Image (cartoon, rainbow, N blue to C red; front, side):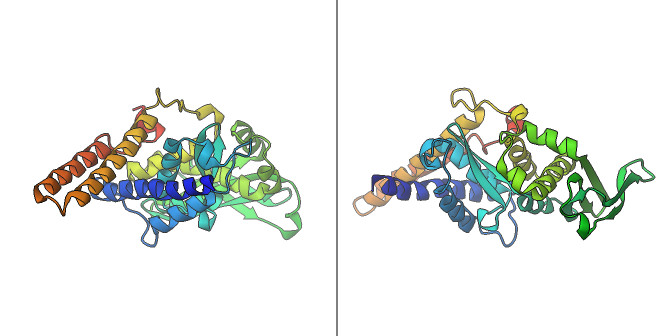
Length: 311
C-alpha cells in the first residue's frame, strides 16, 4: 500500500517537472514539438510504462533508479517527440540509472523531424537477394539495385541499408552482417534475446542509427533536438558510457538544480496562496519567492546531452 501511495505521489512531481521545463524551453530556446504531439499524454504513457520496468533484481525502476535519471530520460523522450504508446521508445535500467532508448520506429520519427527530411527507411538484405552498391558522380555511396525475394525471407541476413531522402538528395548507409554483429557486441544488451528473436527490426534499427548519426552531425537543426537524438543513440553503447556519479556529473548537478528549483517554486506558490486571504502584502512576497524559485530552476539552462556538457 505504501509503495502504491509513493508511486501516486511520484507521478505528478516527475511529469510536472518535465512539462514545466518543456514549456519554458519553448519560450526561451525556440523548442518546437511535432504538431500532433501531446507531451502530457506521452509523459503519462511513459509513467505507466515505467511501472512495468524492473532492474535485474526485479526491483521496480521507479524505486531502483535515481530521480535525476528518470527526469532526464523523460525529458530526452519529449524533446524527440516520442511516445512509448506508439512503440517508439522503451526504458532500461542500468545499475541505478534509467535510460530511454529508441525503437526503429522511434528513430524514423525522430529523423523525420529534421529540416528537409522527406523520407526515412531501412531494409535488410537476405542471402540470395539481388543487391548492388556503387557510387554517384560525387563519389558518394549509393544503392544501385535491391531486389528482395519472398523465397529468401527465411534465409540468413547478410546486411542492411538505410535511406535518408532530403530536398537536397538521398543519403545511403550500408552495413554488412559482420558490421551489425560488431555493433551489437558493443551494446550494453549483449546477446539480448530481442536481437535474436527480432533480428530484422534490430538490424534495420542499427543501420538507421548509424545513418542518423552521420546525418545529424552535419545538419543545421536545433541543438536541442540533435543533441537529444545523439544522446539516446550513445546510451546503449559501452564505449560511450558516461560517468553518472551525481558528484561528478554536470548533467546530474543540473538535474538536481531542476528538481530543487521546481520544489522551491511549488512551495512558494503554495505559500503565496495560503497567505493571500490574510495579507495582500504577504502575497506579494510569496510571488517574489516564486520568481526566485523559477530563476533557480532555469539558471543553468537545459539538461545538456553529453556532447554539449563536455563542450
